[in-house]
Image (spheres, rainbow, N blue to C red):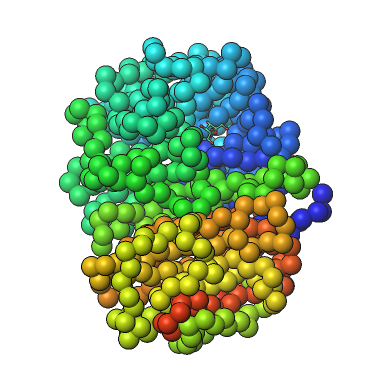
Length: 535
Ligand code: FRU
């Protein structure tokens, strides 16, 4: 249907129609980036017959939709071909492991491989005849055992994978060892567990370098390597990660800071971003993260539109060497190729309590980079406050403080009846230190009332001498914000009714009571990706 067609994105990955959820098995193979995804060919809602959709691209900019890679056609996956991962072995073999929901709705792990390794598009997949290769371990519920990871190779040459689960309310990640991906041995200790976090979906586990932004192959370990562990919490539908140490000998992973543990600490994204998965791109030596971005309107509207969900902009992922305590996520460099002629606004003074329109046509698809300097005298004069600020509960863009909020309004019509705010809010603690929050306020994003209008956000580390800066990708019904080079990220789905196509404008705003802010901003309208379908 053409209704609400403007909500379709221009440079985000989405199928032609129907429901999509998790990214699956991303990899680079013989010149092509592959993305598989949870797909319901029967409609715009999640369904029992979920299959693996498939697409490939040489450059993340021109995509080809390929035939479904796997469908629900065996007893061990007839209730759904669920999420999983790929591993490229040193001998060139490609291993695909996925969860099948059996005829009895038991979650088991299955093996598949390409029918023809010389086909760079990997169109045909073969399921191993002796599937399933793994069933739930003793004492684990049949419905709590899913989403195998990419395998890593240990110093003995054997391979390990981890699979999310729970034991009562304790989230856990079991580890299995294998030589041939057909027979597996469960290791006596799980990789990690965290009480009270519930079921861990789509666990991701990978190394990052402490001293370089070059990505690491999933099997890398040793000096100068930290290991990131991520779990998608079924209970609260967010992706939590933590940085820690992997000990191969006793097969455990220990977080650097027990307060920032998996499921209780920091998130990849403070908006909508779930079931994400990373892969090592051996082509450009980087680690890339994809995440599922669901709709935040109502299901009946999705059904009317005939589609639901997009994938995030793929993000390169590195350890933040300046803080050491978080990762940095940044849109892959290929996205910059979609930028049309940009317009720059330098050193614009935005006085306390003011809004300034930026004359750029057509910002319903845009890439924006903005840098902010708060007036020094106002910074010093700002009263300390014992009250904790919190994006979600402290009133959004309309809340006024001494040092914020200030930022950008995107997907705003000229009357600003609709606007989505992406902003900073700085507060001074009683000890004089500054704390910066990064927020997205959707409360005025749409005249429609059956859509999510929460304020999202969290703190963002700002180091001595750093300016505040953000990047925002706007694409019709999605806004992705990256603060301080990707230390804190917020993705939101918004559904304006007026601020669409050429009516979508950008404004600077400063709702602080005292401080003026000087802003330099560059806005690039964005081209669309090209997407064709192989039939
Ligand atoms: C996460 C998830 C996975 C499962 C898949 C089913 O969104 O629930 O745990 O494998 O989706 O579509």
